[in-house]
Image 1 (cartoon, rainbow, N blue to C red):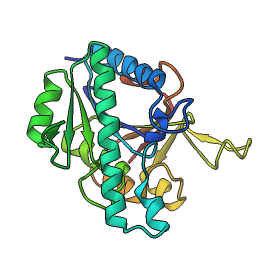
Image 2 (cartoon, rainbow, N blue to C red):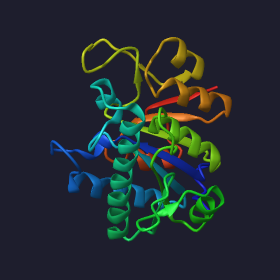
Image 3 (cartoon, rainbow, N blue to C red):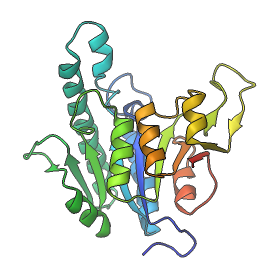
Image 4 (cartoon, helix red, strand yellow):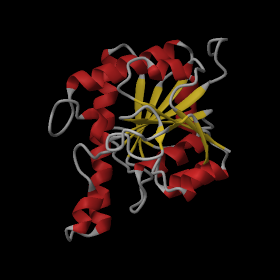
Length: 240
């Protein structure tokens, strides 16, 4: 059971591959992935069940190569494999921190991780294991944002968390426009109509249709993930 101070029992955390870069130009910064693992550990110690979806942009981005002439399906499959690499790295970091973790892949790679099976995933979560969902949806043309919305819905998460480099959703890019305004709360419709780029449109529509609340927060603000798990109002909430 989770701590009595929070109503959140199960979350799905969406991490971008770029978040793992840290101070390196390519691949995974060991310091960054260890810090993320420690924060996830703190969340599990609250009794909150944690699922994770990771992108692969720090290693390979299929859409970019598709624009350069590579077949899009081939590029997307390569991108899915990149997410498996990141997922295995996070699993290792979590286990190094003393947290039980499982990687479940939408592509069958039996020698390195489990196949994704919804009921088995839920069982892992109920046993307190951090469950990392690799290889997106297993289909080309779908982003890991969409995979996160799908998995969050499938496992019955109370909240989908989108980790970014800024502390919520702004009216425009706060890195460029110092007058950009942060929204404390938004509707799915406003995100879509104003094209706020919180997640891709397919993911937002899936959240809307399944009434999956989405919270956008800054991964690099130490402790914010734990504060959200405790039920605090951090970042921007997107809901009905």
